[in-house]
Length: 88
Image 1 (tube, rainbow, N blue to C red):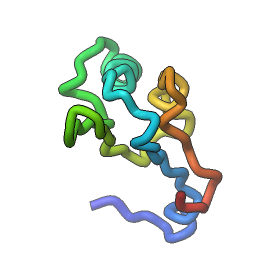
Image 2 (image 1 turned 180 degrees about the horizontal axis):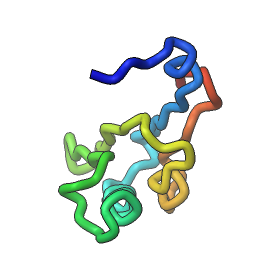
Image 3 (image 1 turned 60 degrees about the vertical axis):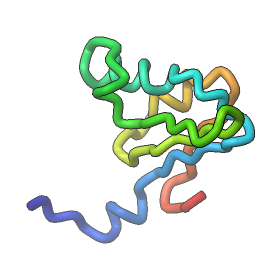
């Protein structure tokens, strides 16, 4: 078990998704797995694209990156990261 100070949790930045902008392309999954594992494999990604309907996509995101590659890679700017200590 890892001990985490409450101040560390409050300073954590969160990634959120705008489902109106997400096309479900999966580029976020590829760049995440490439940066974290050294090769592109969406199955090993820390973000997951979820296609609920053909027109509605969303993603399950993590809170582990200070500078998340998924946010930088999104061509539609559907992902964004909060400021430190704030929830989106």
